[in-house]
Amino acid sequence: MKKVIALALALAMVFAFAACGSKPADPAPADTAAPSANTQAPTTEPEQPDTNADDSHDDWIELNLSFATYLTENNPMQENIVVLQQKLDEYMPGKVTITTYANGTLLKGADIYDGILNGTCDIGVVQPDYTPARFPLCKIFSYPGIVYNSAEVATRVFDEWARTSGAAEMEDAVFLMGVGSGPYCIFTKEPITDISDLNGKQIRAGGVNAELISSYGATPVTMDISEVYEAMRSGLIDGLYTNYGACAFQNLEEVGTYALVTPLSSNPSFYAMNKDVFNSMPASQQEAFMQACRDTFEEVTTKYQDAGLMVDRVITFASKTDRTYLEGDMLADFEQAGGYLMDELAAELDAQGVDGTGTVEMVRELADKYNELMTWDDYKACYPEDMDPSNN
Picture (cartoon, rainbow, N blue to C red):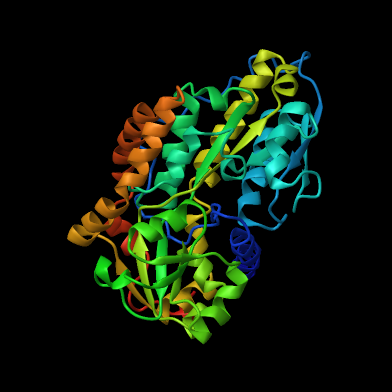
């Protein structure tokens, strides 16, 4: 059974990672860090809704909710909705059913948020990078300057910010759960042991990642991730900047060897619900619904990306490549080189009347808090030197 689950996860991640290369900025694919053995939320468990206070719940209504996603139905991220349905069945049996419209069949990625607002779908997974003008503060999570040690750290930071900041851009729909991606890497044919080693290198990157790579002294090249293998093999490019696992599913260990793993990038997405549909439920049912979301967040949303490491393809890739982890003086050099991008973004947002500076400070404080949950050493321990697919 473990092999079957791993194979399904691996196949799903292929489509997720391939999709990531087709737009200007790499969206948040399934991360590839294994969870720390002592990973726990540094918060108390929320109280369970008192669904037995009135066993009849005569005022609870039945809902058939449409869920729109640009990802495939088998993408690991879909586990969030699968478990959410299980939790809803537990708290309100037979009352709420979620029907998934995957792979953009109901709405394309850039249209999902509008679809939630106008009722084309009831629930959707929103990628802010598709419509950055609508989510100006969400850009902060995609810019360099804040360290996230793992996918769980980035996920908890974005989720807490979205739920507690009162940001106007998050108020048009009912926020259900937030997601943040984990560490990226610069994957190359030659080792990067100092930031100066990137001078003149041709590195595949798009969107804000292109600006980041440029700040490191390299030349960003825009291309679909499916084209990277041949481009590296032929010498057209020297490497790429993307999520570490994305390299595994392109067989890039055949054309490159070195991965500089960096905690300086993340990418947010979130689940949201139409307000009118949510408000059609009585208060007690709304409470049960949101409790189902929080249970799902704790049990799945904070974990599923990190579980991406536990597939043979990623282990094979990791066992055949050399990893260097960005830390110490080298991390400081990279932070200094790209730090101006966050400063410029904060100033730009402030000038627009949006609290960019205050949001950066809040996000940095949240990152400091949750980085205690999984340290960089914890993340590095996910990739032991003797990784062997045959042992998985």
